[in-house]
Length: 574
Image 1: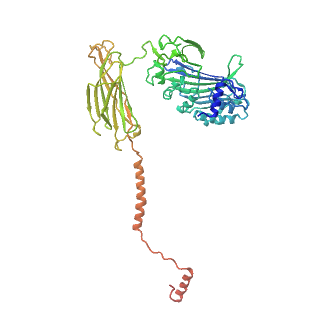
Image 2 (image 1 turned 90 degrees about the vertical axis):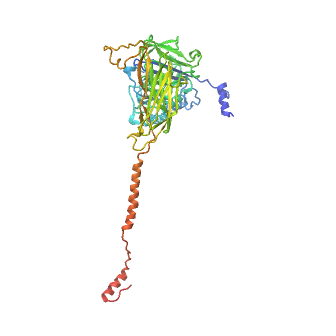
Image 3 (image 1 turned 180 degrees about the vertical axis):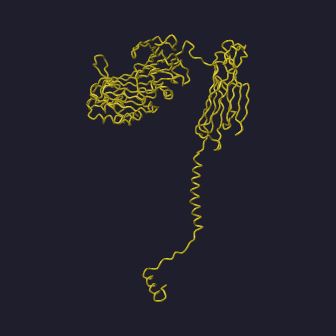
């Protein structure tokens, strides 16, 4: 079911003519790239650059409006045409760029929201266009730009020059404003990604996972629109739309280690293809600093040098438009491995967390890691769970490498309500270089209202699990105790030369319990007092009051006649 308009559009796109009129092909192109730079502080700086060039002019076409958009977003094109915008620069930043630790960013931006616009010199009411433009951009980017008014708008005279072709002297057509308290969240990132030709379905934009991008030390997204020259002689002009996204990942806070990283660790995703509409799609890795200390996997023979911010840098280049970049797995995951021992991984590690939803049931997951490359060893796991978490021991499961791992020893002491907690001990054999997960389900109990803490909605803490083990040693241990040994090395005496005792504690848990509304007793007291005061007071008043018949007074003429009769001694009128 194709209507006539669709057939006409297909005919125009395929043939290029309609009613004898020839339509020129679209003169636009799209490029994307990702630059990754390991910082001296140990953080990772990732900068996305998306560039769209369109050989058209929204301002010189007069009343003839541009109606067909291919790669350039239509919403921004209509904004340029309606408000006669010469240049537009907008950014949303969460965090503060630490220059002393990270160096200079490729495109700087302040915390919060920033907007500065150059209008065309034919605009008569710049303030009116500025006010309408901020409201429109507020809807496009789902931000609070509508709070920009004249109280926070300035006209810089020398600080902001046009970055493209434009009048650099008449600052009457320049407006600048910031919102430093603007909070950047997923609602701002989603419309930003929709402006890309491929959206977030293909290309480098696949890596833009919200929970990873916003779980970072610094996050900044920006849109820059300006007219530029396409050659040195400036014989042809075009509109440039540049979308940038800069992120700094702190691998200390994310628990990934400090130096080693990969695309999957940073973004939880890998690249599978370039954007089909992109003429260029590349990933650059800065290898200028200490290239002999680390190695990239997969390696690439393509190298590039560029002068960036007054410094000559060397980059390894990965071209996503080439099929050999993805290999046979059709997946590209860039890894950086340090050749030196820059990060020591403990042989035994454990962590614990609560899963599930709602306030009735849940699961406790305890994960134990054996990082030894070839040795297996047993560990003793002890869990102490409060009584208000009623464990279902029949749901206890232990898995290692996706297979069941039956404990060789289990001791369980059930809890008694308001008397003792659950106690669970297990002896588990950990395979080499493995992750063992212990899972048990529980049900939350409803406490008495006097048993809740002053802040019950904060949750209830559950103590850490304890993992004890004799961990294999990489070197021979000395069993002879001497006074010359350091105190910290002699706290636990060594009984075997090939192993040493280790005790590991997991994180404490914070569990929410069903919590009543503690304002209800106050409401009940107020309601009861009101009922007693109104009901009992009225009833008591009725029981104790004395009632008398109030006779109506006679008319004035009758009272006057009775007064005269009383003087004359005549009987009074009834």
